[in-house]
Image 1 (cartoon, helix red, strand yellow):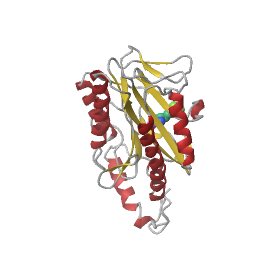
Image 2 (cartoon, helix red, strand yellow; image 1 turned 135 degrees about the horizontal axis):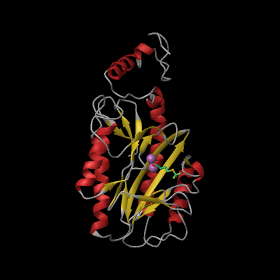
Image 3 (cartoon, protein in one colour; image 1 turned 180 degrees about the horizontal axis):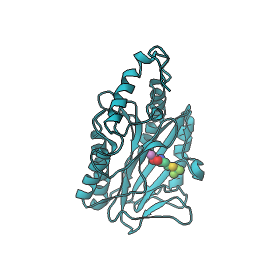
Length: 290
Ligand code: MF3
Ligand code: CO
Ligand code: CO
């Protein structure tokens, strides 16, 4: 599909192509010819879509703040789920995890040796020393945002605090690696892997970040390991998550046979995860989920 200068832009801005994405497309075409992997149009969000994703992310972020204020020893993960569900709905949003591929709850709650996709339950009671990831995905007016944080219950061991902190550093080092038109997704994965492994940890391979915004999971897949200079070029308008899952021992995981969802570390070691939704801008990034 080739547009003329005076046609309306493909992004839905209602602007003429020459005033909108024409230069962008030409730049991308040149880079593609030079051998870079470049995003498809679907991966480039318009101003209107970005605004929609921001509004969704505001609710998602306020939700995680609310959980931060309320989470405590003795609480069940079911109670966190109820809080999350009711809060999201009260703000006009929809918890996007609920019924996603049959997922039975509104958020994921993954404790200690659980890597991700922990299912809230009235039988899972938070106790002092636990570390827990709460992962929330909000849909508002058709726009999706996704973020997760770790919470420490009471006083936790030095070992637990360290994996929580190093995993957060992995996320922020990954974010810092994004340089529009210059770096690739492989650079993001590489710095995350380096930081995790230099601390004696391992990176989970089976799950990664993902494009997000008009669907809960879009392309591209975001690896949290890899080689610098490989993978898709990072360009303005891309919206995706970075969400490293870092294990204290080996990166081998096991999926719970009974519920078919929850991933555990195979060796029983601790695992941590932090997630943000990121927009690549003209001159850097915006952490949308903040
Ligand atoms: N929020 C998760 C992510 O980061 C998605 C969870 S899907 C669910 O991609 F079905 F497990 F909830
Ligand atoms: Co995600
Ligand atoms: Co998530």
